[in-house]
Length: 381
Image 1 (tube, rainbow, N blue to C red):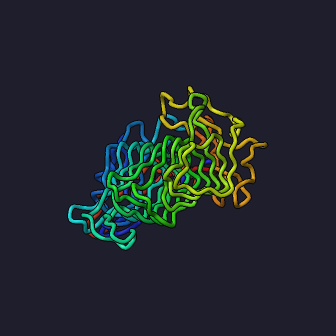
Image 2: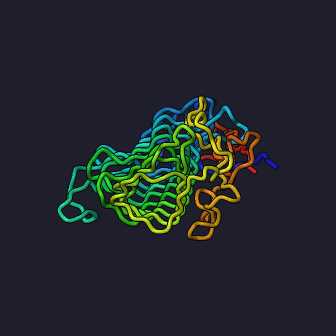
Image 3: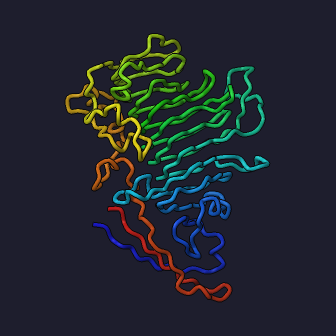
C-alpha cells in the first residue's frame, strides 16, 4: 500500500550551498526547485544528484560536463499516463578546456529523445588500438544507464570504456562519426532494443558483453563482444522478409535464439551454438505490423508482452539455464503493476519515492542559523 512519507530535516545554512541533491520541476515553481535541468546542472558540483519530477511538459536539452546522477520518475510512471520525465536532448561532454567531463555519470528513469556522448580531444596514439592506429582516447566513459527509454543513442568519437546499459528500452544506437570510434569493457544487459545497434567504426574493441537482450533488429555490430543469451525476433508482419545482418559485426554469437533468418553473408562474425527458427509465436502476444509505430510513444516496447511462450524454444535455453531475452539472467526484468498493461515496462523503480512537496518552514532564518525543511514523498509500493 502506498504511503505518504513525511520527513523533517534540520541542518545549518552554511551547509546548504554544498547540498548534494537538487530537484527539478518545469511545471511547479518553489524556492527550492529548479525549473530546468540545465539550471540544476550548472549549480551542481561533481557527483551531485538531480531528481527530475514527472511532468506534462518535455524538459529542454541539457549538457553535462561533470559527473552527475540524474534520477527521473520513469518514462511512463504507473498511474500517471499523461506525465513523463521526457528530455529532448542529453549531451554528455567535456568542458571547454577538457579539465572535466561527464564521465562517471549515472542516469535512471528518464525518457530521452537523443542521448549523445561527445568526442574528446584531438587524435593521438593510444595503446588500446592496434599498432600504428591513432584514436581519440578521451570519449565519455564509465557510465551507468538503467531503466530509461532512449529513443536514439550516439556514442562519442574515440575509445569509450566501461559503459553499462541495463533494463533500458533503446530505439537505436550508433557509434560516432569518426573512423576511430571503438568501445571496450562495456555491458548491455536485459535491454529492449529496436531498429539497429551498431557500435564502433573499426574492427577492434575487447571485453564487451551483450546478453539477455530482446532485440528487434535488422543489423548488429559490436566488435569484441560476446553476444550470449539474447532473443532476436522479427519486427512484425510487415518485416517478414528481413534478414538479420551480422556481417562485419566482429562478435561471437552463442546460445541466442534467432526468430528470423540470418543474411547470407556472415563474414567477420563467429557462431557457436545458437537456435534458428521461423516458427512465429516465440513471444506471447506477437505484435502486428500496425503496432510498429504508435501515435503516442515511438518505442513499441511498452505495448507488447515480451514474455516467451511456455513452449518457446528459448525457455531455459540460455547458457545460465534461464530464458533468453530480458526475463533471463541474474537480474531479469520485473514487470510493474499497472492499471494499464501497456505501461508495464516504464514504471518508476520501486525503491525511489516520488517527491511530492518540499517546504521551508522558516525561510527567514539568520546567518548560520537552522533551517527546518519538510519533505513529502509517496512510496512506489
